[in-house]
Image (cartoon, rainbow, N blue to C red; front, side, top):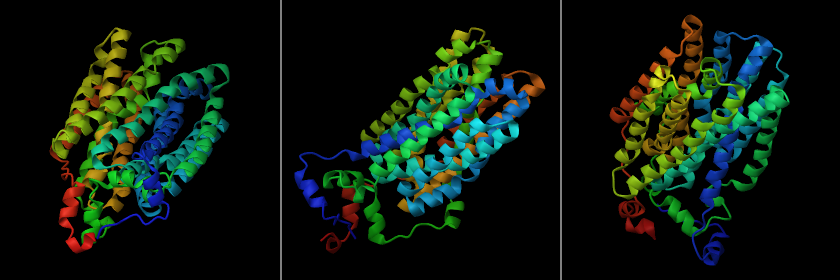
Length: 451
């Protein structure tokens, strides 16, 4: 049956509005801010690592373990986080997560050695586990399918902004106030975000600033009315585990993250220790890949949604930006053979930008393959679990490889191959169902149910 908004304030809101409200963009903007803070938190260690390694005398192999430790709990709690988001919603789970991770970030300032840093990073990983599934869930609830890639690009650029900010911010604080001060400041920022989220976020059906026009726009091609018409229940967890598309999304993200994790972990050490960048040089140009990736993230979302609006099938509109971005991102494999640091920065920037170009369409996929709206958070949890497996393995493998060979050749070539494998997974394994428009939905509903 059709669902109509029966809120007492809905009719006045609609009557008083001369044009459709646009609250969904404010919501996704706040989601982007949450992800920015999350990536600022997690990237702070990689930027501070050269300073910490001098104080604690940390070898490359142990540095790899430290950089990876965040991902141990972050990966482990992805799937439970998705389930909690489907059960309790982003309004409740998201601020709890941010509060938890902000405290553990600030506690890093109390570290006395490798063991304590690992404990604090494990706590951080638990808290940050819900962030990406939460953002995917928010977009699935607040946006029609034809806007989801662009909306996903807006919140996803938060990771690039956070990573970019971490380079000059943490470097400056480490030089002038000590590396510990950076973790305290970032932790406080996270606690401030919670106040704003609780004030602004509601489900679209319950939000006092959402007009009937915007609510209808949000639902226009989501297919939720078809779900209600045939009263199809959400698929069980056993069904999700047996779903090949869930594992396709998980596998594709594993290989994508094997390459992308380099920029979150070993990238500062690579430029400072292997390529001879000074701290001042790194502070000025080190953020370039992340800054350029902000624009490419948004561009990828725009391209995907424009393709969909032009009548291209959902399957192609989502896959083409993903595959093109991942193939171009494989250019990271050329970096060990480049002598010029200027050309090196061009190649690394291109690789990271292309990697980010694919991100928005990938983040829209859980909602595209889900058979029921209440599965989106869980599927996003599975997908991000795959992402964190790659993030977990990559820094440890690079650290061990550097200890054994002293060269970045193997890790860079492996990253390039991983990008190509990921592109193949999305091209040949992932299948996306077609869009159901509002008109098509209403055509499937019996006349008596529409009255």
